[in-house]
Amino acid sequence: MRTRLLQRMRIAILLVCAVLTTICMGSRSYAFEGSAQDGTVAIVFYLKGAFAFITDGEHTQTLEQYGDTQYSSGSGFFIGASGEDPQYIVTNCHVIQSYLKADEGGAFAVYTGQEYQGYPVCIGAQSCELRVYYDDEDYDIAYVEAYGDVDKVDLAVLRIREATDKRCALQFQIPTEDMKGDTVYTIGYPGNADNDFSGASHYGIEDSTMHRGVINRFVVNEGKGVERIAIDATLQHGNSGGPLVTEEGYVIGVNTNVYSSSPYEDQIEEDYYAINASEVTHFLDQNNIDYEMAGKGGAGLGIVLIIIGIVAAVAVVAVIVVLVLKKSKKGAGTKGPKPVRTGGTKAVVRSMASQHGGREFPVGSSPIIIGRNPAECTIVFQEGTRGVSGRHCSVYYNAGANVFTLTDLGSTYGTFLGNGMRLTANSPINLKPGDIFYIGEKTNVLKVEAGQ
Image (cartoon, rainbow, N blue to C red; front, side, top):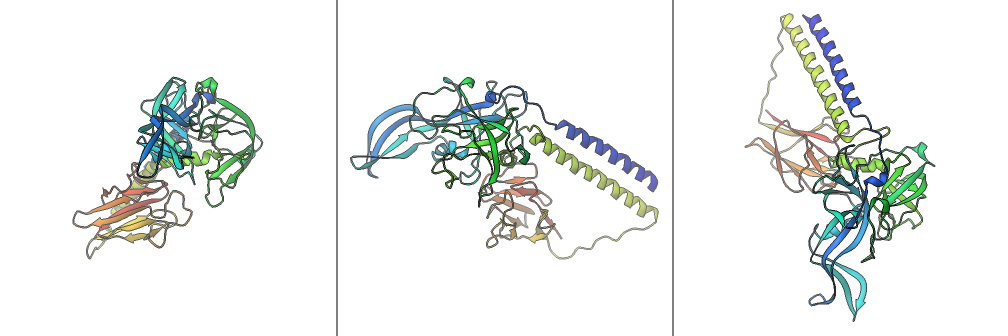
């Protein structure tokens, strides 16, 4: 009987390996067809009912009415699966920063830096919106899906209401050191970003501007850890958020304009940088947004499928091993003792992160904090752990209901359930004993457990 079960286990392992091979082949990269300009768009911060005014803090006087007009613009590019109409756009966070400050569509006001009769002159608007232009009179309204910190990872993802056939999705390629000196191109719609009420512009595919250059070096922001690519291809106002592409049309970075209030205050205008595609794909993974890789990579969804396949393989093998051992013990006429449990309910959070090695952390009715700050957190992740904030999330246990309550504390990269759902900041959610969740990255996984 034991020999037969071992044979079945070998067969099962071979089948699992075959399934994993199929999954890996299914996640292969795809050749990009067409021009990278076909995936690039202009992103416009548009004011509704704009006007200039002065104020003394209590009284307001309107100086001029502008009506509906653009305030600033930048660039972006669509991502998604090859052959499918795209819906998501990658850009820089600073391109949409004014929109975020206006509560994503609400009233807008900003000081112009000028004065009139001794009072500061401001620009205001009743409301605002983000427009994604395909041509001068053809645009979609966009909404913010995710955004980072301008002073750290200056990235954002926008979503339009419905997928469009007017642009195509671009693919990523992670650049390597041996690509120094390779030819690259910046693509975008320069001329308007961060310039108040600039003149007319054109937003068709053929109107996008391409600058040719080479990769000079790969660098990391000191103290911020953001991977960037130094290039000599010119970046102008309006290029921000557009793609940096190879000669094959693959995106290896996101162009980031250097200006006085940018994250790179130590740089001068002649230094041009793009955020490395490694940072961009990491940001997309953190926010569960699908994209497609080229060259040496695979689609983000493909990576997920591989992980699921590996977990399934381990589970199948583990079940068969248990069956073998049970049969072996039964055949020998022995029976293992039942474990003895004493005392009350024991509730713990177990960290499966490699730096904790499965360590248990007791939890009761008072919340425990998880994060990087050792002064406030019970479960402390090492400084520099990717995706983990100082005070990331909290957990407490309700013994009467036998549930754990998990709350994201406004973390940068999010708290996720085992099924990948991201928690809304400061909105508690209940977990059952045995449930798992992860913070920032899937490697930072934790499990809630309760027993006698």
